[in-house]
Amino acid sequence: MFFTPVTPAGFRRHLYAANARALPTFAQPASTPRSQGAATLEQDEQSFTLSFDVPGVSREQLVVGIEGNVVRLSSAEGAPRQYRFAAELPQDIDAGQSQAKLENGVLTLKLAKVVPVSRVTELVIH
Image (cartoon, rainbow, N blue to C red; front, side, top):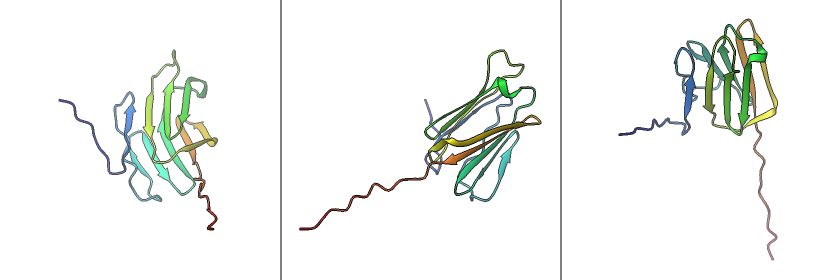
């Protein structure tokens, strides 16, 4: 039998890391930082901030990919340690406005949210 976990926010998240710890759910108040082990998530109105402990790898050995509302992190082949992470966020990410910083073994991703554009068209009444 196969079970699929369902979260209140309606999205799934997966963590594939050496320590096999799950990233906490994203349905907490926006101003509250949350962490479990090696990952931390903060959210405000303009962006998501994800922080990961990735000791033993350099910035050249990490690959961050963004596609819509999905962010993927992995270490390159041949890196001394292997990391894999994928998460589906509740809102699309603006990759052009996002930033990644690696400092003292901590990778911080500041992921800018895409501002929704209104597509309302007014009709002329005759």
